[in-house]
Length: 553
Image: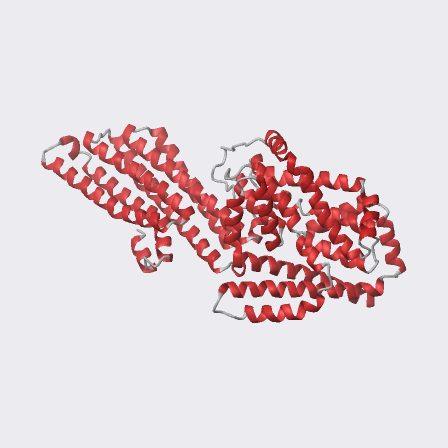
């Protein structure tokens, strides 16, 4: 009975440590997430600033996995070269050791004060950022409390014969310690929590220093496994270069550390007799040495990864999402970034539909009409996947800026899909009807339709760019384009009526088709403008939400 209670208490303390770590990560992401992502993106110009950004961002986020997901998104999308992305991961591996260094000192007495400050800040509703920082303080307090409880729980079992025999057997095989540490870290999804747990065990003398150092090596290896197993589902090998590259350098580092474990262990304990502090120092030293060894080799190493993992394109199913990683949902800023990138694919598909419709109206190609109509299924599938992905994110994990961005993505995808429906159900059937009846537009009428389609494509590209930059100036220009497009449609209609009054037979026989096409193009343009311009103008106070609804159609 006593053993059962002890195990429950132990599991509860570990769970409290994990939850405290989770609260720190989510609190920082809500308070500073978009800003940290921006800092990381701007630093990815060379390996030196990338390394420092990796250290800084991960020290704040306390999650090398979250940093890795961010930079993997940049690298997979071709926004940054692989070499600085690898430098970020080397920095992230160092950054995640800093909180371990702080908590390796006896700071448990600060736990009540941190929790009290955190609760007071958390209950303040006037400031969202203060609320989120309160969450961080509460999480830190819980982590300190959990570590203190672990030390107290382990003390009575320090000399337990059974535990001594079990851990003694494990401790004699360093490779087994490494593998066990890797599996536990993968399962707990937090190398910080695992290293802190190892420190608690070693501080109570339950595991010897050699075994503790081997467990730390395993924890460093295990944290690189999660992105491989639970990361991107894309079949493009290029999207996996960064996590695989990080795992390879961690694996090589683990082999090297195992080879020199015994002398290094003696050296560490001679400099720092306190086992807990020695483990924290070893954790930092492991990642610093790994960074120093790999940093000069990042150029050839990145070329090696590119050679063995070439970019591939799978044309078989373009409706399958590429950037909606399930693992990223634990890091909202990364999940929203992936959803935004996936949404841009809708704009690309819609542009393909508009180009197909333009060519179909000009040339009357039945095969082209059929191929273009199939693109609407791609739009529908991608839109459904994005909506399902976004609605599955825990709303409690989202900050105010995250909620706004999520709604902007939904508005963008909805309007892209509705614009595609108009092309599929209206523009393409009109092109098929013209072909079936053997009709031909007048030379002037054909030129007007082509010019309007070209204008739609330009507006669509502007909307896609605006969706990513959220520039109010570009939003105003795109919103003004709705009025300009309406005027162009009116001018084309008047010109059409003028040709009718002149008795032009080539105009009369296609009159209804011509006018319907102009009307449908105007509807498509309305959705393009509503997709990107109106959310930005609403945020800047230049457009009321009610007007968005009124102007969306």
